[in-house]
Length: 391
Image (cartoon, rainbow, N blue to C red; front, side, top):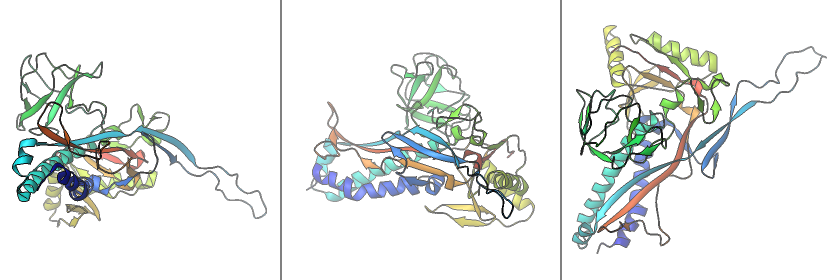
């Protein structure tokens, strides 16, 4: 007979390992390349020393002359808060009771819930990898008072039907009252997003941010934050430490092998960084394929961990990602990235060790998956971004 206890045991012993593998390796090709580690986690923060420049104790000299003076490596301290990543499933008491005497039906029920959790979590993790940590899903949009639709959005790649969003007042950082909405429709042709119901007040991108629920300024530090020349990163001022600024070239125009190689050579010659992963928007991938076919060159492919297939540029994989803005390519040394975590994905458990807990005033049971982590790039100037690539 299926009981809450047997369901708890299944979530712990059967599903947790599968979910962790799916989210860590198979949710996103870039994430699968990034090392995950519990090192340098102190309490609720990541605190680590990042070396920069060269050791100063090197030099030539006379056979019987003075030795070079000794100077140690140079370091700065990175400091960032661990971000709280959650995913929830919900089972009704009725559905559990209906499958008590049919283990196959209960397994199907759990499988459906877990597949939905993996799909939603993978989408959100992939989006955060390329975002700036603010949680903003849009930069620009137009909204008419009382309407349930945002039009003229700068992009709609960050939206998917069913996701739950809210509106945040940027000045206060607080969510507007009664602003939680589910996305009901995404018009990708006209770049419009329709929500489950209208918003009472007029929304504008200057005063308001559209975010995932409870996520404003609480997401991991993605490439959108790392690839910036302004402000600080991990508590280090970029104007004081210019090596914290990555290589960025705008208005690239047509993509070609020379354009890509130029960025790779710059990183190699200036920073000693070895590019091992190239990711771009789908329009850039098609433009590069067109470039290769124009010159009648074969397109080489390679297999990556997680079951991904990628084009090859001199042995470096080129793979497109749905969350990268159009006309953009990133050239990364993934060995300089670490996802620091307090633990791997785990179920929240009560004092009684139970995973499934009854929702307050509701005949449903919920289980919450959690991970506390933050993405750190040890060498920002060893990464490159090409933008303004014509499709």
